[in-house]
Image (cartoon, rainbow, N blue to C red; front, side, top):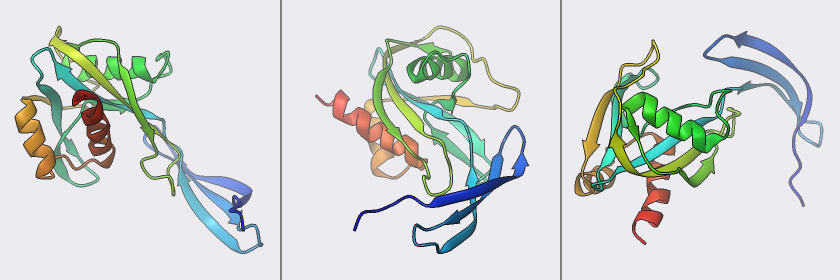
Length: 182
């Protein structure tokens, strides 16, 4: 038996603004069983950056995340912009804007679906090496980020102790580890 996609017989927007584009799809299984409404959030793709300095340190940011109501340590990351020529360019831009760091050409790590069940976007993860602080931060009006630079040993301990909790960021670190430990 082969798996077949659901049949979508229509869709209606529930709410759409700058933060969310939630719609209810009128779906059915291939055998006709109704799955309706099924909610999907269409949000932009985003980039995540594993940034390693010329000294081998890792660049993180700390910021408040309302979904978990916690201040979290994360990798530099953000939504793709229409002006980004490709996800790698978006990764370099986000790293620069959030931290003021710049480095070598972005190296693709992975493309992952953060929650394929009900969210439409993908995360494009990159490694940028030889990073140096070249500017101050250029934050959006809604951003309040603290730059945190950690040694490779501190980062290894952070990962072992579960100190990085954003699932996509953890995935990016594991993909980067394969490249960095060659």
